[in-house]
Amino acid sequence: MALRMFDLADIWATRTGNEVRLVSANDHVHARKSMHYAGLAIDLHSSDLDGLAAVMRRLGFRVLWRVPGHSRHVHVEWAGGVTGPEAALTAP
Image (cartoon, rainbow, N blue to C red; front, side, top):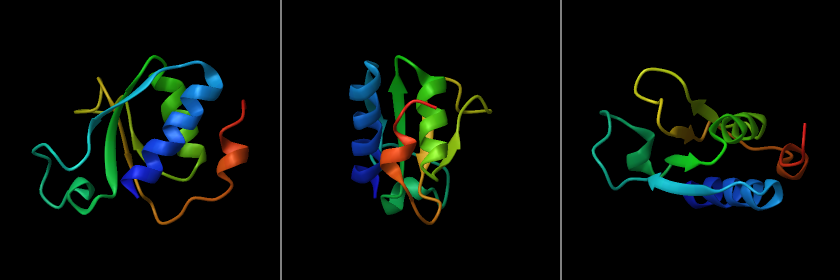
């Protein structure tokens, strides 16, 4: 799922002309029971963090952005399903 999340973020970046970079998957120390350890969460940097957070939310992922501990990166984790990715990746 982590690879799928990054692929979708990369598609968004390509379509919008923004940059996206994977910061962390399950390779750093995270909170206990973090979804990172199950391969269900990633942290991303982007040239448009607000836009990235918005599109990942529209895709159905749980997104932590502009909350304590998530002010320099967007945390994206699986929330049980992704529907309509092509529609969500187009401009609002």
